[in-house]
Amino acid sequence: QVHGFIETILHTAGESSVLETLDQTTAPTLMIVGKYDKQFAPLVEVAQQVIPGLESLILEGGHAVNVDAAEEFNAAVKAFFTRFIKKKAGLCLP
Figure 1 (cartoon, rainbow, N blue to C red):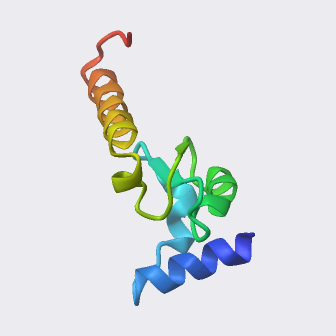
Figure 2: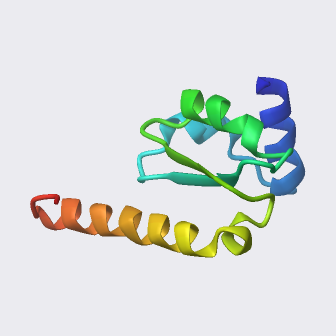
Figure 3: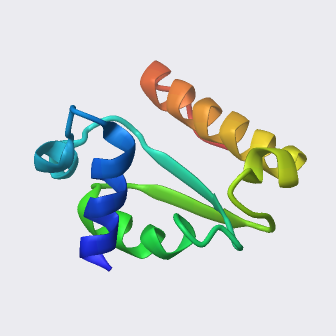
């Protein structure tokens, strides 16, 4: 699975590669994939091992999960950014 994760990143990143620095990620990171996305759904577990503090969510849908499960996708992104903004502002989380 690690090989597949690396191949996917290399294929989608073109000439630039972030593979060497994934484990140095300090920004809050959210990975949302569709349950039936054959390319990315299997990579969630691998990504969790590589990217510190990664939040992941698997929704009903395929590769275009933002279309297939638009309401859930949008709610998850909004909640993620809301938590990040509140944390940065020093506010108590709900």
